[in-house]
Image 1 (cartoon, rainbow, N blue to C red):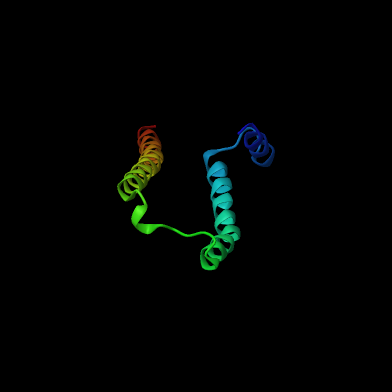
Image 2 (image 1 turned 90 degrees about the vertical axis):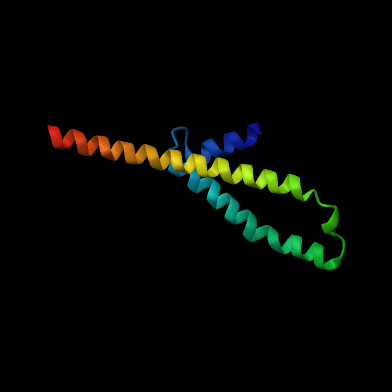
Length: 97
């Protein structure tokens, strides 16, 4: 964990904005998806890695995915509402000055 923090600070810098952090993690996720899907597909097609579909804890997975989606929406909407409030405040102050 400490190594990833150090590497992240070296790549982005100590004073990274939210946008820079979001772009960095989005690029990391896209890179992981682009580079690792052939490995997973090869393991699945060769039969060395099998997925026991009936034995998966579907309720737990669905609950975790729903909570993660809810948290993501909450964060995104909070950022959006903050930006809108700042814009309204700027317009109001500009109107009365």
